[in-house]
Amino acid sequence: VVDRYQEMVDRATGDEIYVNNEDPYSDKNKALRNLDEELASTAASIRSRCRTQQEVHVYLSQKYFGTSDFAYTKKWTDPERYAMFENEYNAVCYGTIGGGNFNDPRLSEKVQFKTYEEQKMDEKAANQRIISNQISSFLQNHGIHIEENQSFHLSINPYSYFVQASGDMSEVLLQKIKELLESNNDSRDIFYWGLKNGAKYSEESLTKWRAYQNVKRYSGLELPQLQLIDGKFYTEDGKDAWELVKEGISKDSSIATEFKGAANDYVRGLMDVIADKGWDNIPDIQMDIMYSGKNGLYVA
Image 1 (cartoon, rainbow, N blue to C red):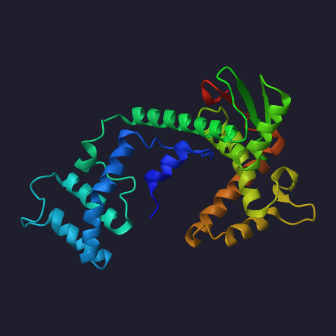
Image 2 (image 1 turned 90 degrees about the vertical axis):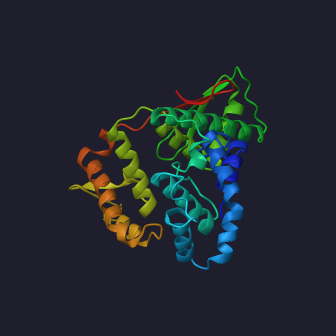
């Protein structure tokens, strides 16, 4: 069983850079952790008496929805009982409640209610703070300390994820930062973070980026290097690029068989847009990121 909470703690305190991070010390995540721990002994007890998931389902159904004194039929509302049932079932069968059902009073009573907008703002701020700390730790572990009054600018190529670094520090230091961020896909992750956190780009530019990345992923081909003839892309030796992409999708084990048709349609649609408008006629995504010792990571 993956310890989701410990994974959050490790990310928040480590030097590996991740696009998506959660605050392990938020009321929500502490409540989830506490309920996981609270249910651990109960889950172990139920596992000792129930041999299959079906038996667990029956046992918990009697507990939360039965008519005997054993059932919690009078104490909780239907949504509360179902949430308690679901969380306990997951704890028994999977070792954790995961993201949890917050209609469970054992969770809802521990977490202050917030609107969807408030919750999203909190999550965005936490992610920005954590990824900033990750970058700081990463650089420090490679001998680079960014003072509070120092900053650097990153311009990230949307296709290669190569970095141009500039700022109020020596060229030697900027070159080292560039090389470090390019060495472990960290520049790619920072690019993804920028997409989700305020970078300005058109839908056409996003489509261009998606087309490039999908063609590259499934065929190894680079879209701007292909020849466009009568609305189709071809390699230098005359092979139809779409056929190579389609073959790559068919061999990709990460795509379930029933979804390969949808994947074909999606990538073909992206390629058709580029063929119709022309690669050079669509602007690239301009990804400009700042990092400062005072404010951390933010979109320029």
